[in-house]
Length: 126
Image (cartoon, rainbow, N blue to C red; front, side, top):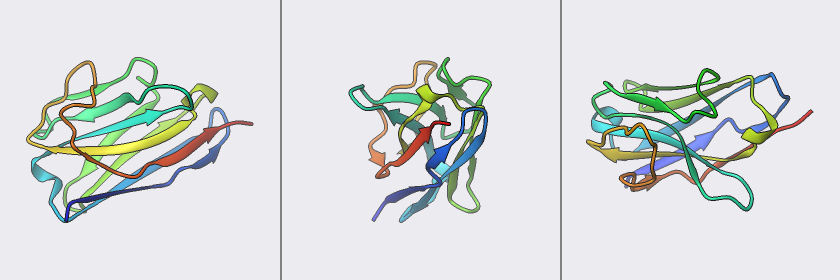
């Protein structure tokens, strides 16, 4: 059974850093495109970053570009989102996602991702 489990969320001060992890089980990430999404209260889920299955394409939302870094470790079957210099507006539930042989569009969208984690809360506050 394909499963994604996020961890690493919590309370972080503005200007600090936090690393989110996503463990994949039941499948190998090698041939999967991966993505990170977030949903703030009262708002729609939005794309944060993605990496194509080939690894040749990585994109970030303009709001996090230069501050967040998306990475993958296929040997460990793990995905990571390093959040540096977070801002209060980054507060949201963060989700990891994966899809077989998917690309990574400049505008990060929920389709084609069909496999999702349960989410982890990130709160940026002093």
